[in-house]
Length: 406
Figure 1 (cartoon, helix red, strand yellow):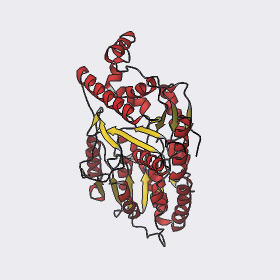
Figure 2 (figure 1 turned 180 degrees about the vertical axis):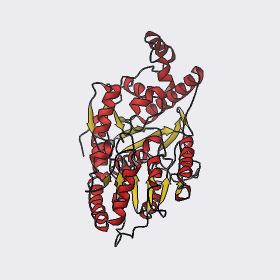
Figure 3 (figure 1 turned 180 degrees about the horizontal axis):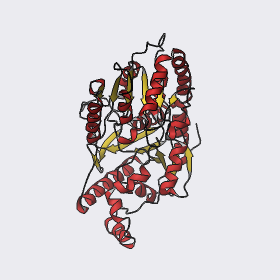
Figure 4 (figure 1 turned 90 degrees about the vertical axis):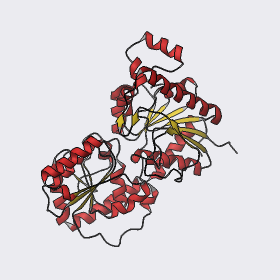
């Protein structure tokens, strides 16, 4: 019998201390890997959500040790010596895990804000690698990695600094490993950001089996004008559009916003709601543990997904549809690869509050449409279950390590 595959998985945030759907996707792949008899070690940052108890249940072999360039939803400002100390400490930690764990393959997950030189360090150590791209980190990551940025325009001096410090000052991204993208949108955007000639593939993530196996409702609930937004509360997610739409809807309409994000943006949303006279109709709640979101979705009449940027994939609409909730969305980016207007969702133009309000009014008055969207949405979620992604991800890991697929 072949020895189990040993996978070192590196990323910036790992559940239960999560920020959004990307971490849930990562955890699902690791749990599938272990369920198939292989070994996974998680190396992540020291980020912790304050409301989660220190003794909260953890997956096995999770090491929350790395430092990074992000704190409390803000990018840090560090001088050259502080950057050197951060990078040197991270390099020592990374090397220790390589020596202790002896991975057959390294998988990189969300890495925005991290020491990207670790990717180059792994390449130079000749450990096979897979880079799972779930957000556009290759666009913003090199700018937020202050060590990387410091040397990016210094050419020969950067090479000298690399040799003197032992810390990579540039990353050979195309040679770093095989790149696995969550959507065609993400692939095209990363190529535009300068990935160059690299080995690539696309694996679309799927909705958690817990959502797909949840007991179905006997009948759709009556319409109560309960709108729900779940996700990061940041500008590119279009939360302001959802608030603006309330001013165009009946007074009983409410919007529940569940998620963390930029504090200045959140305060701006509160001011916007007050200015529009709908502050009492809007509630803000912190991000919930993933397993607690079932009830949040079920208490809503509709889930709005008003993103304005090219969304890398979009797990929220799939989760909502798995639990029988209609979705009104912009269909931007990767979410447009599975959302179809008037078939499994209603789509409106990004940033257009009147378009969102019109779609919501249509849902409110057309029970038949709501039921058709519920059925088609659930079918869409089933086609995008996590098993397919997790199985394909494991096959990629085995192939990277030169192992035959099970």
